[in-house]
Length: 300
Image (cartoon, helix red, strand yellow):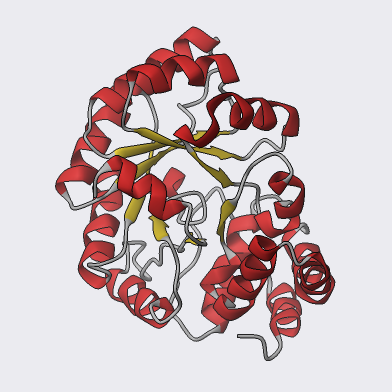
């Protein structure tokens, strides 16, 4: 998919953020991954972001990321497939090329590894990755890789395949500066953990869509919230926040890393063989799984 076409599709609806299942031997379970995507496929979305934060990209090898992309492309041939990409500059460039060769349509560029960097260094990193691929590139602002509006303005002028900006910082001032400065040049994606909790605030900053992790196990609820969000139906959003999202957040907030672990547990509660999360994350306890099951109830 051409980068600008991908940008326009991203703006059209909710983005799915699927988990990556593992076998008992700690290998990527492609069959379980395919089964889960098939189960989700009747629900209309704008695209898949595979091997992202919820997909434990930080615990996957480059070869496993490519394997996940190939599986998603085979199972969802008509769906835009965006893959997590990151680490150091050379690794990120090599990984972007491998994702493109595997049939990916775009990459979500997660923060570079470990060390902080100045704006010109972050700019050089993003520019190199954009120049390494023909796919659309979405910059993910979070952690130690946070672009200013001025940095992004220079990058979009030189990198036509830089088509999206995703925020995971919650810094509404910076987000607003970026959306006002760059207008419709980029697609803007909310990327806070369980972003539905923040979606209405981000809408005021010009962010008109987001990736949903809970779509993994309550797709109809996730789509109902997104539809209300797009329609400006705050009453429905507030009802869903009180009925589901805030109770879910109570489970999620019990331990660091549960923003991923609780999603994987939710998928498992739907009957899918997810396997455990990989270290350094930890799985929910049996008590917490029971709490999550109660939160989900008969929701779809």
